Image 1 (spheres, helix red, strand yellow):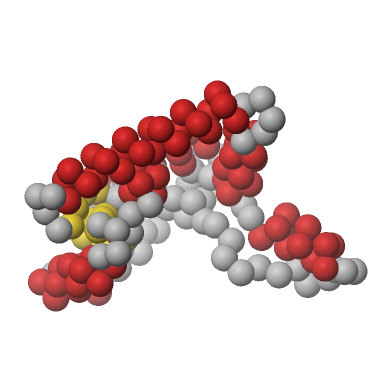
Image 2 (cartoon, rainbow, N blue to C red):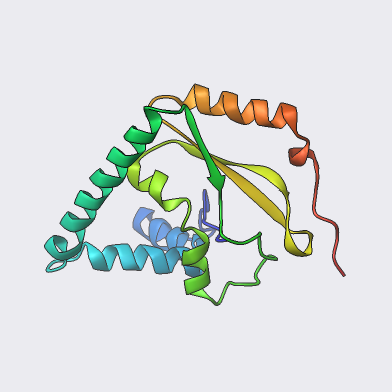
Length: 165
């Protein structure tokens, strides 16, 4: 899917501001930069009420739906993505495909819930498939326990895709 910079620091800079500017511009790929710019645009003056406040209301509704589900279960399991993983760089020039690849993981992020992905097999062309596990607020230990039990019951986390020519 997408790769985001985690701890890049520019090698050459003149002062702290220059280091921040260069580190951020060098450290984020095109997709991460695109998403940051969209977020900045949405939060800019004049769009706050139109987008942000409405989004906060929707976010609250999503969180309430999750709480209804957690009244009946401890962990929610589902796919990470609507497709199998892509080869590295395969969709780097397709922002729509990148956004759609994240569609199943957005709701837990919007609700502020802990979630994780664990290897769960291989699909088309032998590419990896991920299983998304979502836990309730402050139930990270329970979520990690479920993931651990899944890995004890399966060996998908030990397998690698076959090399392709």
